[in-house]
Length: 235
Image (tube, rainbow, N blue to C red; front, top):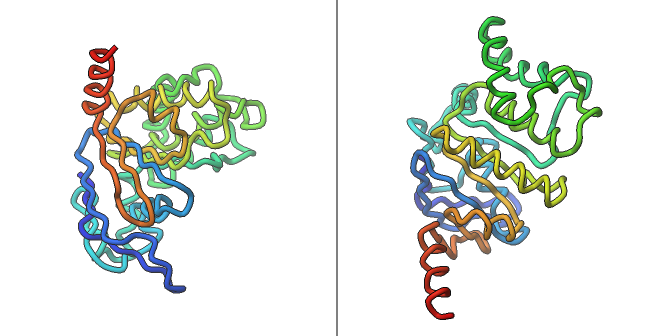
């Protein structure tokens, strides 16, 4: 479970990025975080990854209390988090296989474990047969799926996707989101930060809207279904 309790983040220049956030994401949920540029979405992600420290309040990710976390424990936290960024962040001189394997070698996985796990990951992200390709031989959507495969490499509890469709076209965006839904069904908690309303509307998951550092709306998938049923009854 991820839990923000009255979390406030004030930057050194006085900017209040988050202003008393209360948010709970249960294990196994799929949540969209939406909001305009500057609303506080990026800060929320930076706090989750412990790239920034909160100013006040408490933030827990599973058994980890990030408000009290020492610097030395941050790597352990990040092993629980599989992160996908908008700009892919792939190694251009490494193949698909090597890009994914790198994340596993960093934490000391054995060669045997890597050879066993990567084919499974490639199947999940629909990249079978691409293991020997380099990033420049792949489409933008395929590169993003490599990044997603790398996020899955160490079997994290949480997948966090920060504007994952920002650099790919609408058709590939839908394909990537379908892959994230597939991953969610593997009992992963998935958080997607996005500004693409069409994707949010299509998938009808929980949607948390942030504006000016505050949560202004928190709608669950059942609400979307009820609204659709009401609309059908009214026609």
